[in-house]
Image 1 (cartoon, helix red, strand yellow):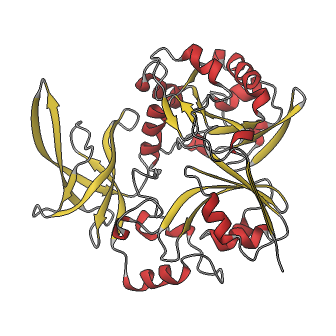
Image 2 (cartoon, one colour):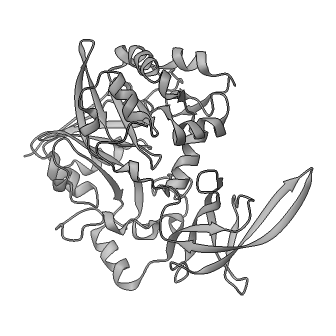
Image 3 (tube, one colour):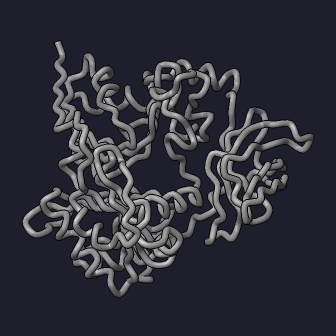
Length: 401
């Protein structure tokens, strides 16, 4: 009989804890505002969200990833377990590589999205926004795997922007310029190991740095020292949200509701309804939700997730979307005026069959000026590509900006 090993480290905690980088964050947090990201204090904005956004787009910015939920999955059945769990073929994520993924209920509804780090043969780390230990344990039945939640044992920083690689080279990470997108590299760092992945949530050139919490402050100091001439700045979650909207990246709880959190089952979404059909590999013999997703593919989906280019400069936050006859066909999930694309942009959920590339729709926008509310029906067009996708994101080696 196969066995399942599980370990959690301080998983059930009620207090809010400072990040291993908190002492450095506190010094730079001019606004003195804090938010909660599960067990940790997090920073919405250090000095100005818009200026922090521009640092990520024109120089490099640092975001604290430590609160992200992390699980190490290892053992003889680690690969078949993950292949049963997620919709993509994990066998294609080779050692030293990272892969984006989603996992679903038996009804084919998305529980969460995240990344799988193939640390070494038979050993993976799954990173996600939501806590997943219960779902992992349910699905581990019958597999010989070890599951360890190591959220609090790994400190993480995202370094994002055009001068990110130049900063890491100045910090002494030899050969970092040769790391390809979604690749992993390891470096000696003051008696410990620093893992660097060429990943991020900004749609730009970027890296994520992972280290043990005891060396977190030293990593922060050396990173900011190396990046001083490259205009390095800290970045809060508000600026990060701006960059991910431009990149067309979805956010759980905003662009879709995790299946385990909804009261009404009709409020969930499948990967096909989120534009993630490329993450669903029906050539795999079995994975959670496969039968339901095959049925959905045959009959058609309920919704289509789209990107909208909207006229004007009034962000369409929480707006309804209408067809040309002014019939309600959907709603905006994320919206902003994009300083880089110089466009009024949004992500939206539309009822099928609406939302084909090139479709023209109307967006009902309400905005307030001097206590007066105004309403505008703005023309919008469904577009295919992200609003921000610079060549440097994929260039190897990156240029020294």
